[in-house]
Every structure is written in C-alpha cells, then in structure tokens.
Image (tube, rainbow, N blue to C red; front, top):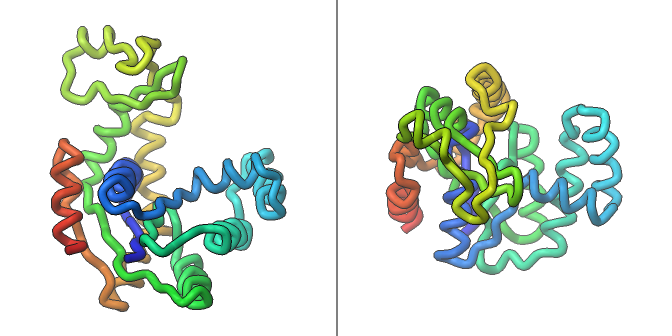
Length: 216
C-alpha cells in the first residue's frame, strides 16, 4: 500500500511514519531528508536544489519533483510507500500520480492526521533539541523547574529551544499549510482516498493504533 500522510506542522507525520516503517517494513520518504541526501550526493537535482537553499529561497516544484523521480527510480517500492512532506500542493499531487502511474503504482490512501491548531502550537513550542546529538524531546506537561533541568535522555547534553519553535513562527507555518497544503484534502477526497485520524492524543502510539485501524 502506498500512503500520503497529511497534517499540519507538528501533527506527528514523522513519528507515525517511523511506526509504520517498523510495523510493516514500508519505505518512508521524507522530502527534507531527500533534499539533504541529494545535495550531499551532488545529483543533478541536488545541485539545483542547493542553489535555492543557499540563497534562502524555497525549492521550486520542478526541482522537488526531479528529486522524487530519482528516488522512485532507485528504490524498491514493493513493500509499500509512505510519503511525508510530499506532495505539498495540488500541482505536486498531480505530478506524483503521473510518476507513479509510469511505475505501475498509485497512491492508495491519503491519511489526514487531524490535529487542532492550539495543540500543534503547544507541541512545537514545547519542543527541545539537544545541542550535542540533535535528539528532539519535549517539556510538554513539565513544571517550570523540571523543564529548566531537562537534559538529553540519550547523551545528557543541554536541551534548547530552536529559534523557529515559537508561537508566531508556528502560526505562520500553519497559515502557509492551510493555504498551500490543505487543498490536498479536497484533492484526495474527490478520489475517495482520504481517511482521517485524530491526531490530538498526547501519546503517539494511541494515534498509531487508530491509523492502523484505518489501513486495515
């Protein structure tokens, strides 16, 4: 089964992708990971992407699609596919359908991890990253004293809040999502491929059990 995961920033798409990969052996493709990989490998699309990234500009659709095409052509899709962060707009979704059709495949299900905006803001603003190893944790639910004393559970390093994990920035990301990506909900709904999963539970495994029920 080939799946597109939809949902706003902080909805838990990455976490649920990890669970799906562990449970079913599906191939997880993250746009962010692919961009970094393509740049590091200096592929044709990666070189193009780097020029935009270095200039602080958004990577155009045609470059993203080139990177996705490269990934599809060099990957084993037989165990199924999870797309996280792609497509980001209707134009990319149409192009994705064409690419997969050439490979004799299609998107079987688009799953919306439906998470209220106030929960998304709360989650992201509570996120902390380790300065030493990059581990991402959270102070959600902690009192001020425990949050101040929070250290990395992996290496004991200092945990800090990224500059972009603030309410104003998160709200802007939500606004961009609603404008650019939310129309995909209608796109997949018209194809009778859309399913919704409640993304509000604080325990990710609870969300995953609901996600599995949708797939089964």
